[in-house]
Image (tube, rainbow, N blue to C red; front, side, top):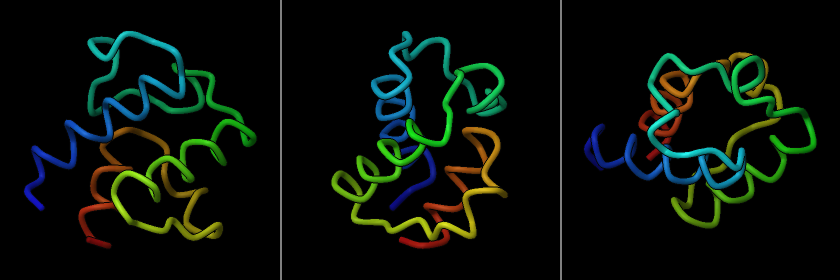
Length: 79
């Protein structure tokens, strides 16, 4: 999958889960600080990514995923 395609899909998923406009989601957007994605919401995000993209995010890797760009890079590396 191309990086831009992954980014586009993840922005859509993140915006849906965080209940924000996709235009508010940039590569540098912090999942926790700017979008208020807590641990419970992160579970929903991970499940949606798995359903939509077929990529499993390991629990121990979640602490390293802080921004949308981190998420894109992680998914890109797993797909």
